[in-house]
Length: 240
Image: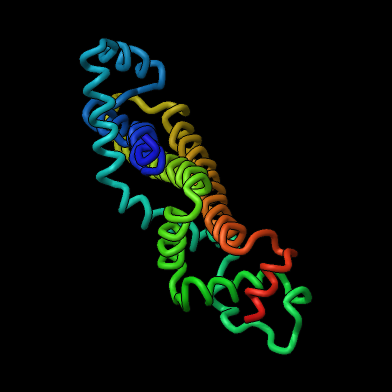
């Protein structure tokens, strides 16, 4: 049971299913274009039975997991476009590999002490993604409780990331359908704008939860390995 709790699978199951829902809805809109949002209600009612609901959930999960790699690249592109850094310390831990010399550990900034501890336990890492993977392995062995929290943040990040991508997909399909409906109204032009705004909002939430995930594994590693930052044991190990 504990191994089940530690796996990302249970969290990822819900994240992928919820995140894949707008992807599936976009496919339905491509198959059956709507002239207005009011027509969405009978479309949903048409699939409102237990058997079809299970199929919809399964398809949502399949779409959410299948496009997970694509949504990650989409997430990185948006981070670069809107200058959002999803790492807790940004590039600081990669750039500050060399800690100050000749300075007592208690006088060093916390970031420098953390870098020194990472170099001791993990070794030099050039890519933040590799650092995250190494820290996850460390926490899996030494602090499973911290890992549970970190993976819940990661799963929530995946959900919001997939939702953002799916909403953009829905907006694109809605714009394509403008040429397939009999009459154009103001609503037809306002809906994709509102959906894109919602996609940006879910993207910002994805960034937030990714930062929380990064913070959890970094600080979890620090306090697991060396205790509170001001403890004598922690300072002695940093000063090695």
